[in-house]
Image (cartoon, rainbow, N blue to C red; front, side):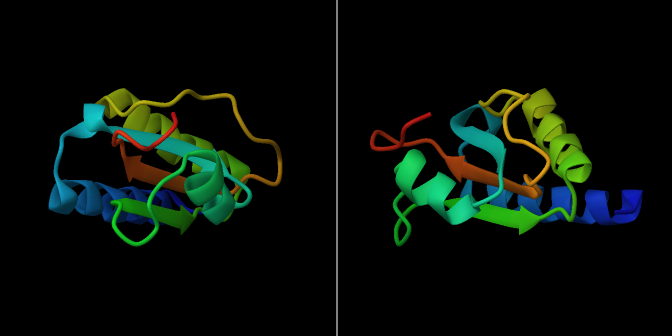
Length: 100
């Protein structure tokens, strides 16, 4: 994964957050090997009406770099999760029904 690709993915997620609104502190960012399960089962994000996004970063290292970028911007979450199979980065708008 090149730096340009990492920056492209971060820009796509950033654009989604800006479009949906709420500020970084109202968003959660994480990494997962199964992002749909993580979003819709573990975090209880509303698939149809919630604001969410995930991208395949191509590698665990790239996913962790993108996750850290958004944590540094103020998103909720915490580094250190996942394992070597974790190459998706995801973000969702925190609501009353989501579980962080």
